[in-house]
Length: 479
Image (cartoon, rainbow, N blue to C red; front, side, top):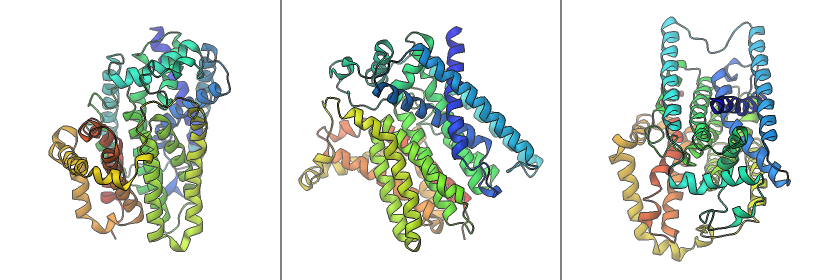
C-alpha cells in the first residue's frame, strides 16, 4: 500500500512540474478567445512535459557528478506537488476573474455528448493503467535495454557508472537514450527499492497525456467541440497503441516516442494552421515552435528514431515554407529556427554525455548512405513496400483503420490536403515511411529482420500524425 501511495504522489509531483512549464508556455492570457488554451491542453501537456523534464533534470544532475538519492527524489516530488497545486489554483482563479469560460458547450446535447466522451476516456485510461500494472517488465527491450540501466542508476546512484560502459551488461546498447531509465530510477528512489511493476506507471500516463493534449489543441485551434472529442477518442482507440501489448501497455520506448512525436506534430500543425488565419495570434506563433522543439528533443532522448523524425520535420517545414511563405521568409524562418534551436538545446547535454560512451553494434546509417549501398538494397525496397502495404491496409482489422481513413480523407478533400498545415503532415508521414524504407535498404541486417520486426512499432509512432491529418481534413475550413 505504501508503494501505491508513493507512486500516486510521485506521479503527481512529476505532473506538477510539467503543469508549471505548460502554463508558462501556453497562451492562457491571450485576448483572443479563439486561441486561448483550455484545461485539457494544460493537463495533457503537463503530463508530457513532466516526464521529459524529470529525465532532463536527472541527466544534468548526473552529468554534474552529483549522486542520486532518495532525498533528491522526495525533493523533486514535493517541489512538483507544490508547484502543481499553485499552478492549478492560479489558473482556476484567473478563469473565475474572467466572466466567461471559452469553449463552453452551446447546447445541452453538446454538453451531454462531452460528458459521454469524458466517461469513455476515463474508462480507457483506467483500463490502460490496470492492464499496464498487471505485469512487471517482461519483454526483451523493456528489460535489457531500459530496465537494466534504471536499476544501475538506482543502485549506484550515478549516471557515470562503469557498469553502463560494459557492452555485455547493457546488451550492446550503451548509447541508447535515457529518458525512460531515468524516470524509472526516479520511482525506484522514491520507493527505496526496485519494483518494475510500479515504475511502468509512466507509460499509461504518457498515453493519456498525449490524448488530452491532442484534444486540447484541436479544441483551441478549431473551436469544434464535438469533432474534437471524436478525433481524440479515435486516437485513444488506435489498436496498435492500446491494447497491443507492445504499445503503451509495455515498458518499451515506442509508446513514449509516439506520445512525444505526436505532440511535436500537434504544435507545428497548430503553428501553421494559425499562420493562415486572418489575424494570427502572436503568442501561439511564438510559443508553439518552442513547445514542439521541447518535445522533439524529448523524442530524441527517448529513442534514436527521434533523430530521423526531427530531420523529417525540418525537411517538411522547409518544403512548406518554400511553397507558401516565400514572402514571409524571415518571420517564419525565425519561428522554425526557434523550433530547431530548442530541440538542440534539449539534446546537447545527452549527446555530450553520449560521446563518451563506447560504440558497439550501432547501425551507422549515415555512413552507409551511399549510392552503391542503395542500389544493392533495391530488392529490400520492393519487399519493404509490400510489407508496409500488407500491415497498413490488409491487416487494418488488427492494427487500426487509420491508414484507410487517411486515404479516404485525402480523396474526399484534396484541396484541404494541400493547405500548409495539412501538407506538412502529409509530407511528414511520407518522409517517415521513406526513412524507414531507406533504413531497411542500407542496414547491414536482412530487411525481413530489420523492418519486419520493427514496422508495427514504427507505424504506431506515426499513427498520431495520421489521426491529426484525418482530423484536419474533416474539421478545417474547406474553402
